Length: 275
Image (cartoon, rainbow, N blue to C red; front, side, top):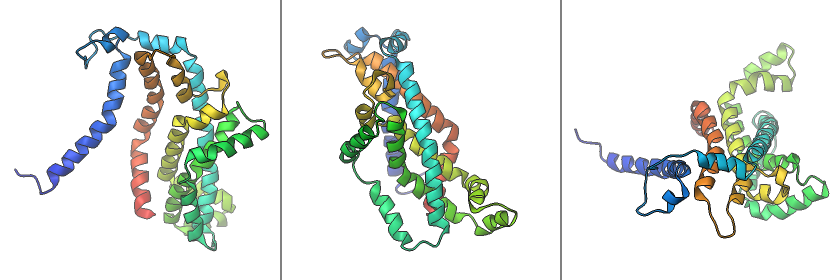
């Protein structure tokens, strides 16, 4: 049986993408199970000779990793919920209301998502300091919400446009307000898009480092990405312990994607077809 022309190259490209995506995560997991002596020994051992969980214990005792985990979870969840609420209102207005210059509004939304975060750092820091919000959850929730709004809005607009207006009209005839029709009819029918936008917002907030480092300098308010950088010393890099902490950081996102993967993939493909 011969493969169709171009199929081998397609399979090779797919294999490269899979290896590129999974190999770093697998290597981090294996490193977290090795001792420091085994990690620096030669020749390199791919599989741990004597797997140990001591690195995970030390990761939680050397730094308040559980506290960092809670901070990241709180900030990511709050900013995701707020992003979805605001994005749903904005997307509904763009998709349903007869707005002038609608295309210009969408262009501005796309353009606003292209500013490098480092260029926004100083004004965001000055704003939060003026409001007295430094070293609080709000200092991160508000900027993360603003940064996630463009992608969440664009994803939801494509889904809202695909829902027939007759369903909303029927709900309003039955006594719903326009907002009631949005939350009770449109949003449930656009569930794949809502899940997609929500997971994108959550992952962005969970992984963000620069703002978390700059706005929350207090030890008790550090998030997971910032806390993990504290494991290295001036002259030492305890890679097994850092790898264990990285595994702890990866697990929540991996579980989230595994649970909702069908909705996320469906949302991305349907959004691309409907947009």
